[in-house]
Each structure stands twice: as structure tokens, then as C-alpha cells.
Length: 196
Image (cartoon, rainbow, N blue to C red):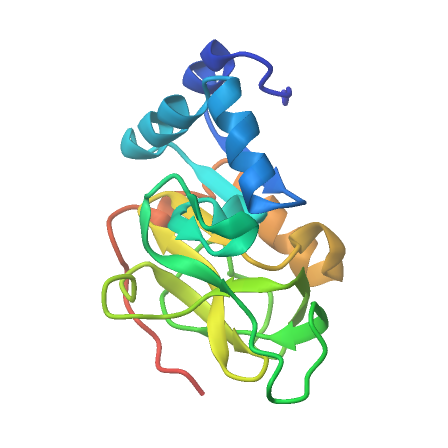
């Protein structure tokens, strides 16, 4: 059964955790701190339990963000979240459907097809850098490459919204919640696939 975590103890007791996020980075971290969720979330990930962050839920895993004047995040993934550069003439926020370049094997992405497109809506993004490249599950592009999904062990997160991504997104959510979904995600990496 699923339930909403209302108390710190709910996080510790959870077998798997879906961590969605919509809104501003600074406000989200303020709520997590006020409710005492920061350390329990870090501990949940450290224990290796299945975790899926979505959109802001992925961004909060990084060390921090330039949004809201520069705010510290959960610090689990190296790097900062920065604003898209509007210089290429692309509108910001980035809203729309993009393909993924998968860089690691992942149970989360099994069965979605190589030509699947997923739905994004965001003004800030993380970039691949040497310190976080072992976390990067997939990238996408919008005026340059950005991190579309991360994975290490059984911690996974997406910048896109699986719940708004049609059949491909629903398959990803099934891959996360159904028993056995964590099989391929054990360990700190998995085999890498070359981008096409």
C-alpha cells in the first residue's frame, strides 16, 4: 500500500520512496528543513532503499541551486542546478517532449523503447561534470545537454515528469513500484551504454 509521508518516522519506515517536486528550490528546501526531513531523506538513500525523485525531487538531490539566490540542497549528487541559458534563442522555461540518451543500464528505463519521448517543464537544470558523471543515467538536450535522469544503486531520479509522459512514463513508474523493479539498479553503476 502507498501512503503520504507526514512525519519523519514515515520516511524511515517506508520500503520505497517516491519524492516528487514542483515549485521553487528554496521553498522546497525550507519545507524539508522545517519538517525535519533532510537527514531522514539522506539516511533513506544511504540505506540503499528504492528512491525515485521527480523533477524538483531530482534537483534537490544535488549540492545546491542558483535558484532562489543560491540554496544548499541535500548534497547527495555532486554539482549545482543552474538556469538555462536563454542565449540560444530558446524560450525558458523548457516545456515539451524530448528524447533521452541513456548512459547506464537501468531497470527504471526498461521497456520504454529507444525512441520514447518524455515530458519536461523546468527553468533550471543540472549539467554533466566529472564529479557527477557516474550518477548520470540519461541526458537530453535543450540549447545544450543537461542531466535528464540520475541513478546510483537504488536511488533514481528524473528531471522529466514520468506521470505526464504517456505510456513510457507509466512504464517507468511501474518499473519502480512493482516488486523486482530494483533488480538491475543494485550497486553503484551498472553497465554503460554509448549514446546514439
